[in-house]
Image (cartoon, rainbow, N blue to C red; front, side, top):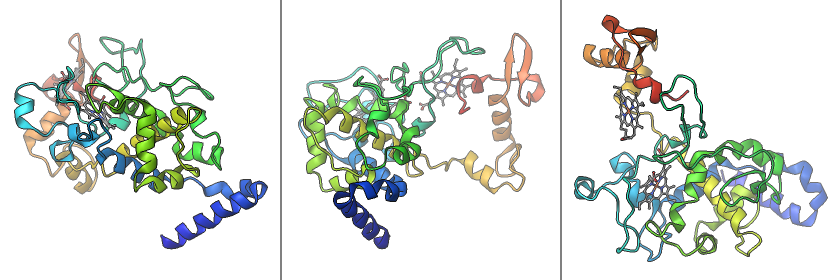
Length: 299
Ligand code: HEC
Ligand code: HEC
């Protein structure tokens, strides 16, 4: 670990001294661990106005990554913003497993609405990754890799984290009913001054800067870090009874030894699609199906 850090600082130092040399040395410049740690630090950091609210305020691992206050959940449901005179109009969904949400699509065959994907209850964080670079402040394209020491290497390593979860993360910091920062530059400067700022440089090969020309791209790089963290095993733990039973079962097939008969029946009903009296797919216990998998699938 320490050796790696030393190697890295040597590489960065040589990059400054021998810019031409650098392109051949930079094949391993990507550092997913640092990117995920950056996202984790920010998830817990109260980047808000006033400074009393972080992502974790509304997405708490002790409550399945959603709102942790029973009284709020029983009454107003939405969580009061950093500015205590504000409140949104929706309940936080869990932020766990969000990196499995596919980009927003319409006209999907086999779904009643034809609509699938995108983050937020209404899927508006669409997260379709644009081909090539973009200056659209709400889309994350190849501009996040440009100007780094290794655009191609970073794109290979981080490119997948630019979908709905990253686009979602562009929202809360500057939403007046959530973290209420005045603008993206304020978020950028907060991260620039934070103790964990070196993680930004370790992940992106360049320090975070917040001048007008760079504030949007660095804000997007922060959003990519949020997505990378939320894609890590720290957030989706796969530790439910179903996951455990699946892991422990020698042939990994349902019915699972570790589940009760009723739980196995629930599984089979969940995964059976029955439309218009016809079984379309699934094990169909007693000829029945509950169709849950039509909407709840990770394909
Ligand atoms: C004030 C509470 C609050 C804060 C703070 C907050 N969120 Fe959320 N989060 C919500 C609500 C409410 C929604 C749903 C909003 C909607 O559908 O319009 C949501 C949606 C999400 C989703 C989408 C999940 C899905 O299934 O579509 C993710 C991921 C997420 N938040 C992550 C974050 C991150 C990362 C941060 C910090 C940058 C954050 N949230 C800060 C309340 C909050
Ligand atoms: C037509 C699509 C659709 C079908 C079919 C469907 N669901 Fe859902 N389900 C949703 C949507 C959308 C939500 C989130 C909205 C909400 O909570 O009102 C949801 C929410 C849930 C949640 C809460 C998740 C959370 O994080 O709070 C559970 C649990 C659930 N569904 C289980 C089931 C089961 C079990 C079935 C089959 C009996 C089923 N669903 C069938 C669309 C569907």
